Image: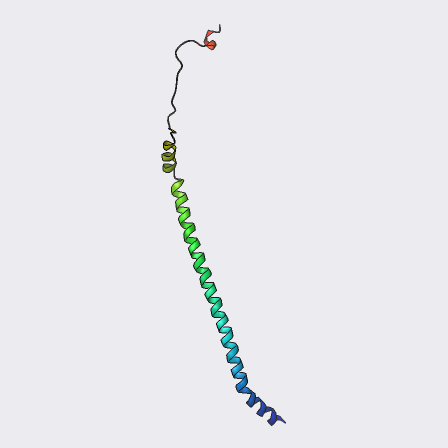
Length: 97
């Protein structure tokens, strides 16, 4: 009885080997596809990170004090206020006893 079991196991061995090779190929193919997706996601993350860095640099340059001062001058804002006097005559406050 044990010899018939061994004979059937020997006959089934090539079929099992072929089956395991097919399963290994399928798993390897799936992992390769997953690796490609991970690489694409990494490239997307890197591109967005570079874009964020450029935007941070642009924000920093636009918010610098020199840039703000230049924009204020373009809009007519000055650092020294213009004083307008209405004359030297007395006003009601000075006329009180």
